[in-house]
Amino acid sequence: MSEDGGKTLDGLARIPSVERLMSSAPFESLIAVHGRIQTIATLRRVLDQCREAAQSTPTSLAQTSYEFFAAQTSALLDADARLRLRPVFNLTGTVLHTNLGRALLPDSAVQAVVDALSRPVNLEFDLDTGARGDRDDLVVPVLRELTGAQAATVVNNNAAAVLLMLAALAPGKEVVVSRGELVEIGGAFRIPDIMSRAGARLREVGTTNRTHLRDYAEAIGPRTALLMKVHASNYAIEGFTHEVELGALARFGREHSLPVAVDLGSGSLVDLAHYGLPKEATVRQTLEAGADLVAFSADKLLGGPQAGLIVGRKDLIAKIKKHPLKRALRVGKLTLAALEPVLQLYRAPEFLRERLTTLRLLTRPTTEMQAAAERLLPVFERAIGPTYTVRVEPMLSQIGSGALPVDLLPSAGLVARRADGKAGERVLLRLEDALRALPRPVIGRIADHALRLDLRCLETADEAVFAAQLASLRL
Ligand SMILES: *Cc1c(COP(=O)(O)O)cnc(C)c1O
Image (cartoon, rainbow, N blue to C red; front, top):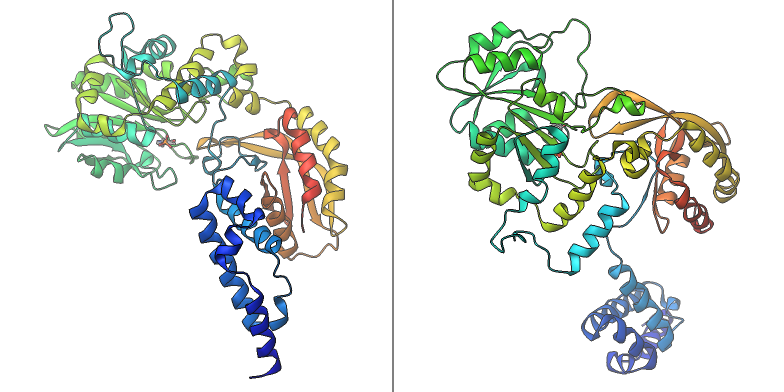
């Protein structure tokens, strides 16, 4: 055996036994936090790693103290115990970012969720009569008030709402949809797929850019169950285009006793133009234009928790609620706890901009982001060092989640570029990685050879946390 091999054996021999380590003082405190089973399993991993290291580089086993093994074990235990779902800073410029959890809830909703988490609630219990209740009824009155609908129901998300609507109203039958509305919404939501999963048959009419009422007229027959319109969401058709207005389609539907359903996607409850945002038909306007049913998301423009809402005609909603899929797609108490206070906020539209987080972020004046960027510039510059140059620059935010995709919101933020002026992006990717590795990861966006941090979604209250953790940036 070589001299090195001798050292390795010496080193290995110096490692205390698992039993002695586990009964030592530093390990007792680890056991108190993580429990004996996890601690011993993790210690074994540490010992295996040490033995392996000692085999390849004999001198690497310099440390064999109890404290050394406890520190190694503790670090691994902490890493494993760290939650995978964590708060991040969304500086992507996309306010309703699907991958970052879409809408942020206002405090009243957060408090209601906290209450519902640890106490019994009247989820399906009628407090007036003491009889069994219906969980939908918790939000039906406010939804009726806000949309003018006769009835409403709530499911897990808008994809579920559309699936359920089709499964309940058109099983084995045809649903007529314009080719220009056969969209894919990202994350594999495609109208044709949902249609076949729901057991309905898609009857496409018109062309991608133009569909006329006569196209619908030629398509309907005894097998037709439903006419459906789908909001194009993340996609804009421009130029030589024609779609049949909802009002005209609804009149046509009534003449032929065919209900008209609308997948509104984002589904706003207020006229966004009042708040200086691009115009979008509200749910109420969609019903007033003649839709029999409207399905929309609760966590897009509405600013609530993930859910899908279906509002409209009482008889159709009743049919939907009776379908077995409704039970499978229903929401839990936490969703309803969050949804109700969010809907309540819409009853006082004059305070909405201030109280509804999503609307507050979407309507933030550019001067606020500009001022924040100027405040943070020196701290950021110092943290990332001379490899980069940083500037405050105007930028454009997006609403996100397919809402109004062509309308961008003027914003401002920090832009980092390579100081050497070279084009390669590796240096930028390194900065992006380092920001993502911070205790509260910072998610920006690389475009045009620059890393961009849009400060629209960094509210003033969070600025200090953002700035303070930059000291631990490791590039
Ligand atoms: C976003 C969207 C959906 C899917 O809604 P989720 O709530 O994400 O399930 C369906 N249809 C349209 C038109 C959309 O914009």
